[in-house]
Length: 117
Image (cartoon, rainbow, N blue to C red; front, side, top):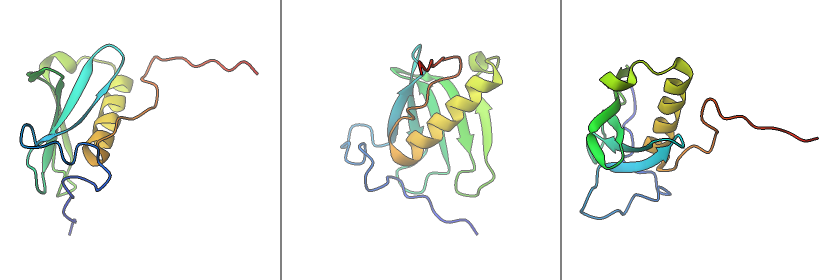
């Protein structure tokens, strides 16, 4: 039996967002596009959506089955053709925002880091 997901962790910066948009969990960026993560409900959501910030109709990703553990990802039409590495990065970043309200600070795929030493 799966446990119920807490809608907002106690340290989630979006926890007390107010009456305006209670379903927004937070946002993240891949340095080209800003994304917003929305939950399906305030209490015990079973899914979440990732949309382009300021355009909730442009759905990037929907993840369902959060409470049951039977996860299923559905990609928006425009986003299905992106490379698997980018899609895995978006899924990981979206999960982190959904659960904690904070964006992942890992570099997005394709970002290169150099070490001088």
